[in-house]
Amino acid sequence: MNTPANIRIVLCRPIYGGNIGSVCRAMANMGLSDLVLAGTGAFDQLEARKMACWAADILKSCRQVATLAEALADCTLVFGATARMGLYRQHTRAPREWAPAILAAAQSGKVALLFGPEDDGLSNEDLEQCNHLIRIPSTAVYPSLNLAQAVMICAYELYTASGVFEPLPEKSPAAANRMKERMFAMWEQMLLEIGFMEPDKARHMMLGIRRVFARGALSEDDVRILMGIARQTRWHTGRTKKMPDGNEG
Amino acid sequence: MNTPANIRIVLCRPIYGGNIGSVCRAMANMGLSDLVLAGTGAFDQLEARKMACWAADILKSCRQVATLAEALADCTLVFGATARMGLYRQHTRAPREWAPAILAAAQSGKVALLFGPEDDGLSNEDLEQCNHLIRIPSTAVYPSLNLAQAVMICAYELYTASGVFEPLPEKSPAAANRMKERMFAMWEQMLLEIGFMEPDKARHMMLGIRRVFARGALSEDDVRILMGIARQTRWHTGRTKKMPDGNEG
Image 1 (tube, each protein chain N blue to C red):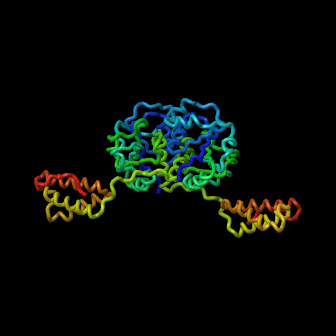
Image 2 (image 1 turned 45 degrees about the horizontal axis):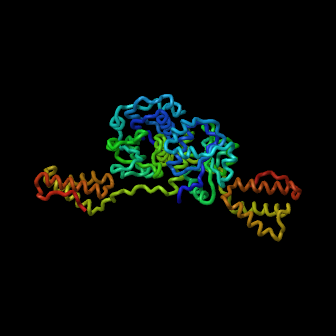
Image 3 (image 1 turned 60 degrees about the vertical axis):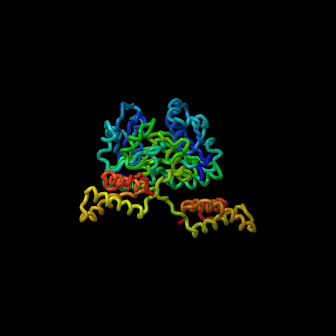
């Protein structure tokens, strides 16, 4: 599922240009582009452009409307973000919980995520326009997030839930035991030859070596490097005439 | 598992005071407090205090050191955040994937999360000090997050994974069918009495009404409100002499 064009970020009476710009950048990072400012006064345009960084197009194309009702008129579902507690704020869920419902609804209609002003957040009157409430997990002692940070967390959860992000695959697969055993045999031989251990202590010492290399999951590339070290050491100390080529399948 | 005091945020050569302050606030939101600035020049203290907001104590107590090596000397595990691609940046994982490993390691030692400067991010030389790399999911066209936003996403994932945040329980449980059937019976009676539907159409119309109220999961509180409406309507139209009390167990 794509992060759809149908998700709108609505900032309700935002005050600081820097935050508005930061919201634009966060949206660009997470594949959103529909921004509406409702009831905004004059804000620092220079600061907004600075914080928007390369997301200036979102800032430029954002719509400014006088009222929240206008910003939400064509939306089929409205989610309001609140950090405050109170009688009207008891039915909240975390953005990760809401994400699937938001993405599903955005398949068939415009969905708004609504964020209140920096000083006070959404008022009870604003809440009347929301179908659902979002509460971002945060500490009880300092629950209030910066406006742009709050937008980022929500946008990030939607982007993550949409499944569009494909993490880079680990370029080398985890090494199988067969390959690792060949490597340990090479190390044992090498460590005996350079006199690191006596033959009667080899078994005990190799257990220690095995433990060292078992701390993390070795990839095939990792094992190839370790084999290369053993091979090169043996060649360098003259114990083998075969010139190492550094490759091991 | 608590978000442990053992997690340190290290900012490598940060430039802007505003970002440093925003990092402090994000840390306070997510229960972190150990901040180290490495190789920082002079930065705008006023801007930093402004953006730190109520997290001024983290800003005040943060440690400034000359080199990354000093910042990381007592750490047992170092995670570097990078958005750039390249030969040395292929073994990355998302913060959500790393979170359990980071929290587990922080049980027994200090773990650092390292973030590069705003303009260029961590250099290849910086990466040498990292045991593991974090890549925050973001769009391919605009993958570079603001510094404080990047810190927030990582801190948020750790806070969420730590399980300390207890979402407010839904104060009213979902209504059981028994209760909903009682409500539908009251509505049917009421809708017949006010002439909204004829008896021979009641069955068909009630299916529509049932569908309307099945769109979302009704809580017991919701059903009590709906029962109250039916009861009050019947009382108001004089069809029942019993004064409604608005309560229904």
